Structure formats: structure tokens, C-alpha cells
Image 1 (cartoon, rainbow, N blue to C red):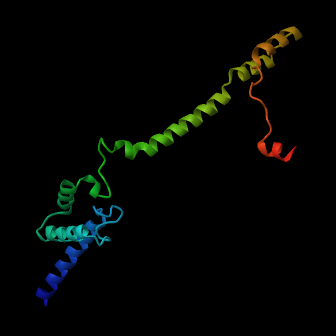
Image 2: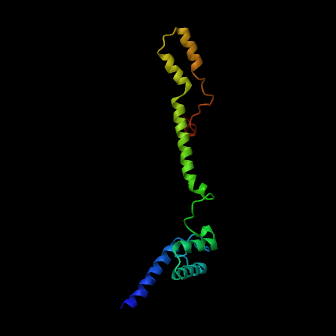
Image 3: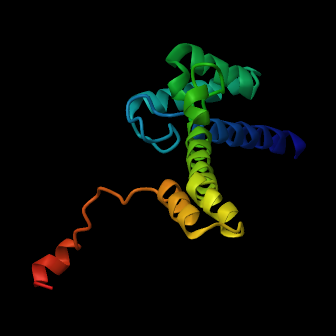
Length: 159
């Protein structure tokens, strides 16, 4: 009884490991499917190769390494982190950091506008009307040169 269950159990282990590895290996012909899902000839051969390697006693890491050596790093769905792929892996973090930096700088700039700070300082200081007028002329920025046109929909409706 045990002799019958032993080969069945070993076969189940081989199948389980093979399916796990096959789900993580990209079909070189299809590109968008794993070799487990693909019915391409190369995928069928790779599945057979993986099962043969498992039966010969190789570990999962050794099988992944062999596939990577034979077909390149793109055959694996999860490429390793190294100097060549660092930009790809870190780009979302870099873009988020740049966006946060720009947002923080604009908020900081709004709060530290020199003219606003100077006007706030002068507000409580007793000055003569001529001194106040001179200070306001110096501290208030000139009006923006951007024309204040109405939105296109107001012009279109004739308002």
C-alpha cells in the first residue's frame, strides 16, 4: 500500500512545484502569458524541461537560474533588483518624491512671500501717512501683466 502511495505522492509534489515555477516563467513566444497558461510549442517544451529538472533533484532556484541563463532575464516575471533595473523599480518613488517636493515648495513660497511678510511687519508700526504711502508703493508688487480674459464659455454665450 505504501509503495503505491509513494510514487503518487512524489508525482503530486513534482506537479505542484512545476506548476508553481511555470506560473512565474513568461512564454518566450507569447510574451503575455506564463508557460503554464500558454499552449505554444516552446511553452510545452519548457514545462517538460522543468518537470525533468525537478525529477533530477534540482532546486527551484537552480531551475530559475538555468532558465534565466538560457533565455535571459526577461523570461522571469519578477526580475531581480540590480543596477540595470534600479531606475525601473525606483521611478515611482522618485516621481512621487519630486511631486511632493514641488508641492511643498509652492506651499512654502506662498507662506514666505516677501511682500506679505514686509506688509505684516509694517502694519503695527506707527508711520506718518507719507511714510505709509511710500512703504506701500515699495512693498506692494505691481499688478500682473496677464490679461484677465473671461473664460471661453462666457464669451461664447455673449456674457
